[in-house]
Figure 1 (cartoon, helix red, strand yellow):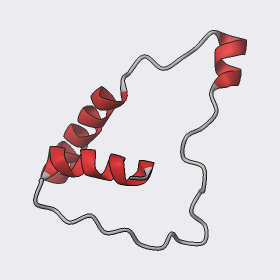
Figure 2 (cartoon, one colour; figure 1 turned 135 degrees about the horizontal axis):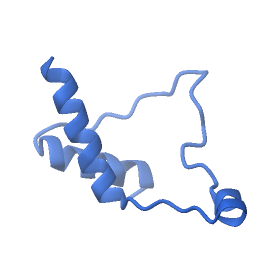
Figure 3 (tube, rainbow, N blue to C red; figure 1 turned 30 degrees about the vertical axis):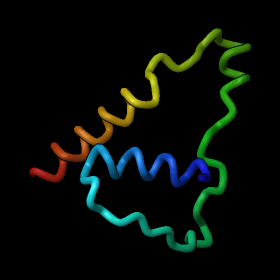
Figure 4 (spheres, one colour; figure 1 turned 180 degrees about the vertical axis):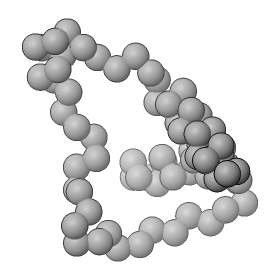
Length: 70
């Protein structure tokens, strides 16, 4: 199971477990790398993310739900 599918499945299960996951070809101008390298920020600034993936995902889903209500 590839990483994209695992993430899609987590999102699906939080939103609606009955949804179907469909992968489509990416647009030509779509960025390939979606997980930036933060090693320089760690080294130069002593910074690292404080939000766990699951918590960030939950916040993102809730944000979209609020936006779509308007």
